[in-house]
Length: 102
Image 1 (tube, rainbow, N blue to C red):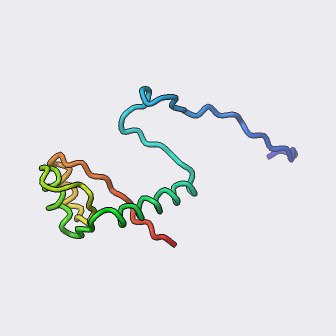
Image 2: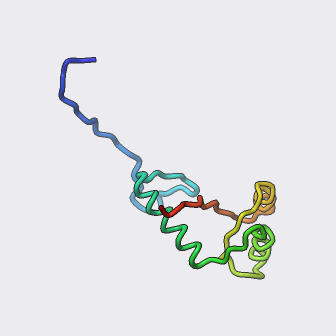
Image 3: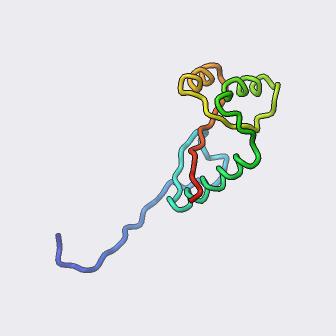
């Protein structure tokens, strides 16, 4: 504790990438919470508008898409076991959190 009422901000040196060539693959990054809300809302709307909902048939459809037997514009709800098996088979997946548009 101190008696001073002045508050100073310290200058920080964040890790800033200046070009794609210096970026490392599979790095995580952060955005501000309000930006994330907007991004997730738009992503959910885009997926639900332009992609086919295959529901519980996701694993079956993912295997078809991986073999080139269908397009990749679909989403669904695989079980954790199905997700693990798809990943073990080398099928690339991306979990998109369901974001309620309130």
